[in-house]
Length: 402
Image (cartoon, rainbow, N blue to C red):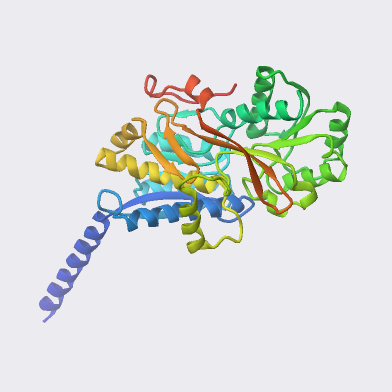
């Protein structure tokens, strides 16, 4: 009797193991690390939603290579140390074949060495200061050179040549400041003052006094998160908006326009690769899918569109390669792969691993939304294409700065 029971248990165990193996063989695992909690969750939640919405759409259409995609996701809790911990966990334990992760440049730089060591495709989907060059890293957000090249030219033409820079004192702010100076020189402008402040600053009276003394035609304002709204409110309260313009590359990327007062937000200019109000062919369907799944209590931010595009580009590369093998997938991504997203057609640049994509200039209004002022079609990541050629030099792993 014991032998029979043992035999039955053994058979059942083998059956379960075979069933589990079959189930695993029928799915493809991809990893995600986003800031679902903590101070950056206003971005991370939407990045996560976009990834899961894209995966659901792909699975509904038959999956990738006939297999269903499975997302293994971790919450970084807006802590840098969690990115390295979970990147290793997802790769070594969960055996993912691609990683979608990060918002800040520091999170990207924490992940990149792990990705290079394990040699899997990594997608960074956020606007940033530009210059990341790595065989295994693919950037689907806009670089500073894409945003500021059009924004500074537009600002000088609209407001005048004198520019003041107000930005956070870390790589996004300081490197973006270098780009402002470069494009000011190129388009006949002049930086008449600059202020780089710690992220903890909440009282901008000193900066506002400096701006008043410098008398710029417009301010390039790049403060991050809740502090950004504080500066804008104080700037408006000082009565400067009537005579000094404000432009930004990151205003609205975390829906700051929703929380500022109408007086502070009206007239602020921003430039990004996606706003919910752009009139592109695929945008209405994207918004319908989003609304059906999550509702539209808050506008969809650019990082969400960046992630949506990243997942679809990776899936298209796998289909083209006919395998999830990283070498073949990267080769497919470097073949000039394109995808029509909610922000129009995007094209992966083979050498730089950045996207050629539309850049939009918008103006904030009193309804806490944006009006599209100008669309720049297919803006190339010119600086990244210039300094980063991963076809000719595939071993490059560097963060270039102007």
